[in-house]
Amino acid sequence: MFNKDFTQSVFILIISTVIVASISFLVWVLPAFFYQDKLIAESSAKPLTALEVEGRDIYISEGCHTCHTMMVRPLDAEIKRYGRYSRESDDIYEFPNLWGSKRTGPDLTNLRRKYSDQWHAIHLNNPRDVVPTSIMPAYPWLFEYVLDGEDAEAKLKALRILGVPYNDREIQQARLAVKGHTKAEALIAYLQSLGHEQGVQQ
Image (tube, rainbow, N blue to C red; front, side, top):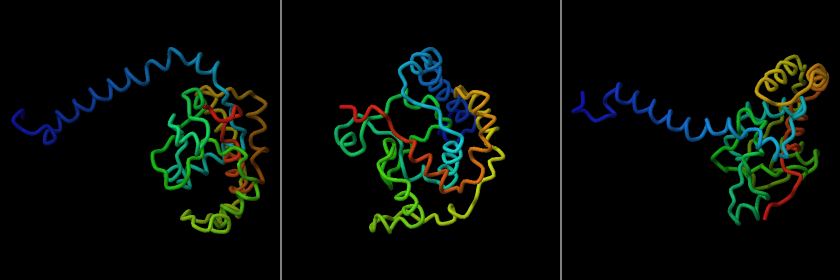
């Protein structure tokens, strides 16, 4: 067994994977439990509304996160182009995190109110109408599908278990807050929630 290359031994590969995963957990995950309160105290992040949560799920289901990142690195070029750089405390309510790694399209971290709702609607329906060189696909069907909000309450309850501070009233009103809106409206609401009030960090 030990005369083989380790990639040819399933046993060695499993042991190696467990060791690497354990080190990653000890270095990256475990310490976060000890300073979570500090992150919450210094964070400007706000819980998403029920409609924005629905829009975030649509953002994920349509694969937007595979072409757009949500993490501005503390590099001059990125700050000048995308705005304030990302901090760990920005993502305390993100489940799952949508940092991404591929920028086929621009980073969306600080998109908040850069464009109007109408601009986003035109852009989603046909991106070339507002950005002639865009390679982003069109999403006209998002305007046709009307949400019933049936699972909105369950989503907020699950997020509350993970630590997002929703109160009982917000959870009870979640279905009505989502019902009757199109998928496009929910996605636009989410896109308009992205960003930070403090502006650009220099």
